[in-house]
Length: 104
Length: 208
Image 1 (cartoon, each protein chain N blue to C red):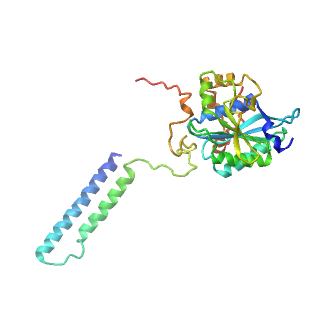
Image 2 (spheres, each protein chain N blue to C red):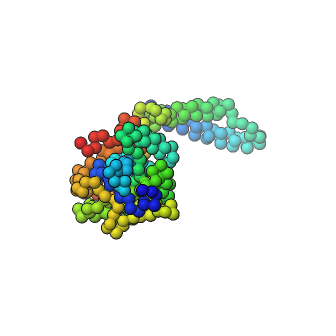
Image 3 (cartoon, rainbow over the protein chains, first blue to last red):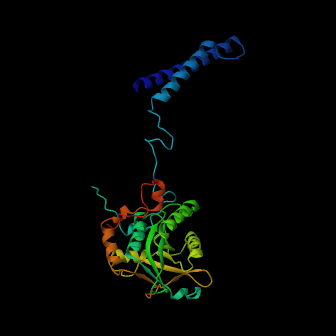
């Protein structure tokens, strides 16, 4: 859990560093009056590593995946809510209000 | 008696059929619900339709045809062994002050009356239900609607002389008792049955 978070932070830092390096590199190119074609190879490597770390962190840190199969046991939705379309309040329920145990 | 005598027909509803329908409409208080009436023409007097049982149908998507077809076939097959058939339709509107028959109710009523020409539609009357909740109502808390000669559904017996009779006059007292003991929680309709087949739409244990 915490490992995933730290890896995510590290990944974001690597990405920021890659961005910073690219800006520096473009500044350098402007001084040397050369055309910018692509960032240097170490920045590209940094980007790929940062992407991989961030992706791994994003998949592990928020928690476990839940099944979306309709027949899986843990999240089987059997009932639709009572009011599946418009919610109205002018209905029979007001005749026999439910007993609610609540402390105010 | 032919079709012309529709106006003189009386409908006698048994306590269990009546209570089951009202409890069903109270179980799903926030939605429109429907049900069918099961019975026969009285063998003693063919001016009386005996409604001996009822089946609560749906509490959502009332206008959907496939579940309705399935349920009507299931009900027909189950009751034919007892010599009973579907003789009418019950409907409860979603809104409290809505006293009109909606299009869906009329269409289902039309369909049932094709097989049983004397079929009525019973519409839950919220005003009477309100009186019942204060312990003042003696007559059934439903509005009787029948098809007139021009094939339109028409409310009858609004002014006291109702053609809809309770077989057991004590039904409203029993009903109030069931409501106050929250018996409506136990009602299972065909909708519940289609969600979970272990639930029995016949509600065998409801009145035990």
